[in-house]
Length: 183
Image (tube, rainbow, N blue to C red):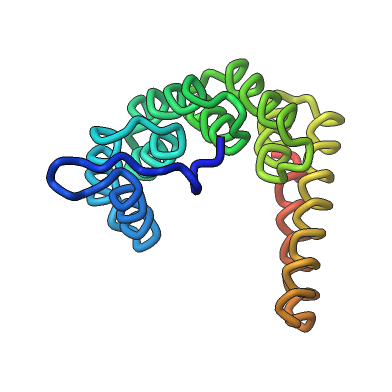
């Protein structure tokens, strides 16, 4: 389901779910998390959408309200099980709550939907490292690094910003080394 092209439901008061969702996105981007939560909740009162539940979950997670975030992510995947970002966010919430098997399953579900999802690879790799499954962790972390490198290269090509590429690559390599360092 393409959420960006859905026709928003118009409320009697004139505010529609898409406009409220976009308002929530602006609040979220500016770090005003309580306002973002309010806007996403109002949008959901107008129309229940997976994308809005997912973004509500992000705002709640950033506020440290992990149980509520988990419920929002669960609702997002219940409404649209084909969104890898919602599965990745669900995995993050499970991991935060110490529910590691469920986190692993959520990350794997995200990767089944999108094998080239760098964040799902990264988060699964970090989780597997935590579980002592180093060979699998390294494989996923390397894949995340490769995918992110490709994304950055493409972004640099589009923007003509090749001079920043080297610095970003060095930072990614350092991050990978830190993640793979034994405790």
